[in-house]
Length: 290
Image (cartoon, rainbow, N blue to C red; front, side, top):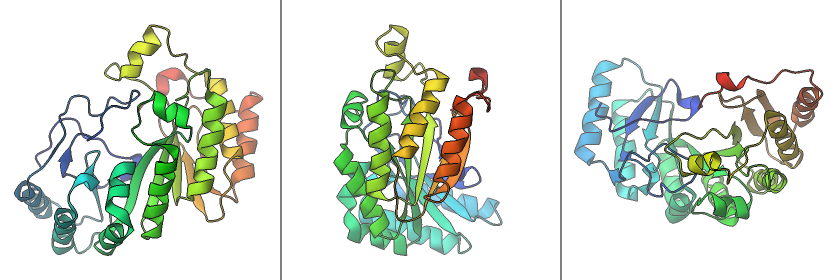
């Protein structure tokens, strides 16, 4: 496998075969993110991708999950993406699911008909980084998409019978706008109705532009207990009709939460209340990881 640079994948793809079909991220301007700052975005050649798939087939007896990296596999033209999925179906008939990251604007460019075709070819989950439901926060972090565009993208994914896995980041608004961030992020999930929602907690590495703002006092990080308050407000504002699997058990989180909404909403809020009352200990800062 010819990987270029550091490779990233969602936590739930820990046991997946990672196939790098694009390098980097087309946007690559989000202030909190350092994932692709060392890469210049480009699309890999099809013969190289096919070679990697054939090499993996020769090495692994069974491959049940495949994740298409890097940050923008949906930037591929439809015919080339279909060809990659066809090759996966040919080489890995045992594969149970194919997944990828999807930037909101890439999803919107695809449209529901193209997304349905990708679903028919085996694409089952698109991980979409919403980060926040607040237009102010999205503008501050230079997300490159509005709340309305993110909601529309999630709805398109779900309409195509692909599961949307939406990521939000607690602490992303800092100490000044945390309430707006929490409320608007919760209502974004309510309006978009994704199959999955996950909540990470902000951790900023030196390559991220926000790192300098933190060091120079232009951005005030939330204290751990305030992250819990924000998380509670966010969950209070999630009201979904269809089942949404919610996870806040990433290595970055101060408190591990997991449940299925709406039925587990009260139990998770009770767990947060116990943490606010000091009955549940929070993860030490030195134990947090990206």
